[in-house]
Length: 240
Image (cartoon, rainbow, N blue to C red; front, side):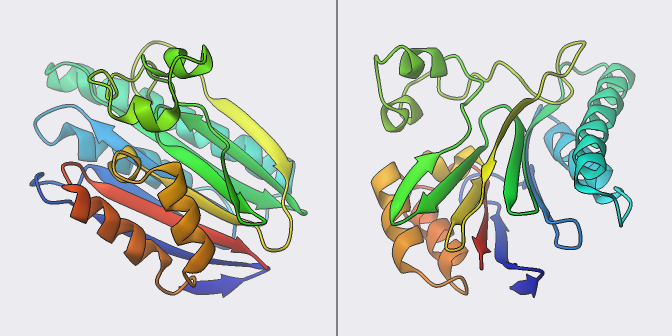
């Protein structure tokens, strides 16, 4: 657990109960106020290569950039990882390799979220939880059309079919959300290995009642208790 500037954060990733390899990568860059989760996909140890490529690229962002330049550097780093993963997939000749990405950046009392895939950012504000990202997945269209909730979508047989990922397709398209951060806001950045098992109400309860020191541990325990069939990653960032 760390404190720097006006944020406190805590990070955990867990292989889960069924997988042999953790294909999630987590990254905390407190000097940049950037936090990231990437969830790899592709057989033969390729998923962990992809997620680590994303994290490694972002970790190389130089220090001391102004917020706008840092935001561009974040986007450029993820795009660079996209090209690297595509080249690796071609070299291996073993099919598609890719990774979801979700990154949160704080600057000057504002937040920016960038993402591709179904890893998510939530915000707890005044005790109420809100999902800030929108999954790039087949079932997301049902949710956006009002035919099911996000909680129901997690249980849908097609819930793992993502429509966008780093390393997949010619051009990488990242979505962006931005807004004001308020004192007391709590952000959760996580892979779908958590949200398969934790409903909105469970997340709201845990984020609303658990101190920063133990909150990610509690979240991981929920996923493990639910079956832990996937890798589980969570980062919680508190705005002080």
